[in-house]
Length: 413
Image (cartoon, rainbow, N blue to C red):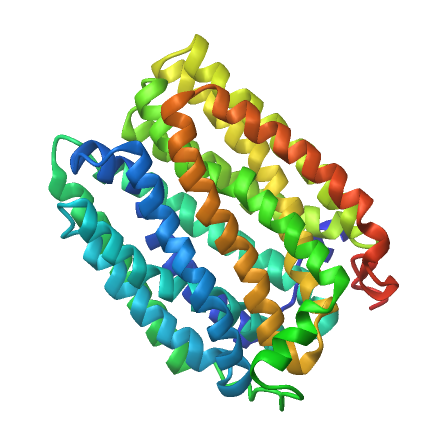
């Protein structure tokens, strides 16, 4: 019972409100996440490789928008920047409902890329600013819980709505997602307080030069980029692989994503509690092997199974991957906040988000080509990359300063 009581993060009410809005938003993202690739390929006739490039464009634009947003966060605050991002995202995802040609999808990807590039540094800085240091690990863990809970419920709902026999069902999914961004916008402006930005000691390029001079941060940036490339980006490919190479229908795909979500919802806070006092880079090392195990399972579903049996095996892979996500969520963002100078928090978070955008740019682009060439072998290559990256995390641990090397214990922080 004592351990269960210790899982209550007791976050400030403002953080709880922010994450409640994020839950609604994540539900909308979950509705479209498993089905965007299927929509563009199976219904709009766009090839695997081009769809991969479209999804990569979304992330690629974020590579440019993110650093700009980081500067805006440090100058104007996370709340105002996040509100602007939500407007771009709402307009962009609504636009997908009207896509019929490949070039239209690329234009929409640019709009959503601007929103995504600004969303993550703004939201992360806002959470850090509203939360005491000793509660940042559970705060970011809870962010991962609500995000995945929303995505999982959304994916299940999307699976019940989507049908390739009815293209309008996919357009409805994008309209619902656009509406959830507007709900989050209203919650943000009405109920979340303004966090005044710190007075930046450096402006413009000088500020980013200081961030990039941080060797520990550069190591964390590189490791996270590879994990996103070979790990998270695989979820953009999992649904289309399941449907076209394992005979899994849309409803079952939604359930596979729900399994991943339920694992995270149940395990994220306990995992965050268990890693307290432990070395963060060692946790990232373990993450590499957990994700490798998940991706090794995936091609077995396509090679030896079909339909329901394949869906069950993919659900196991999604569950294992979810455990890895819990490790990642307990370490990555809190580590960056501990490395960051307070007056450069927005820039640190922007470059941290840039590692996600870079991974999501390269992952779908390379994955779309790879899955067309070798749909089963793609997952084995991703597993190997995850293993090597886990070993790299262990090798780079000496670069991390003592103050940030271990996850703080809530009782002694």
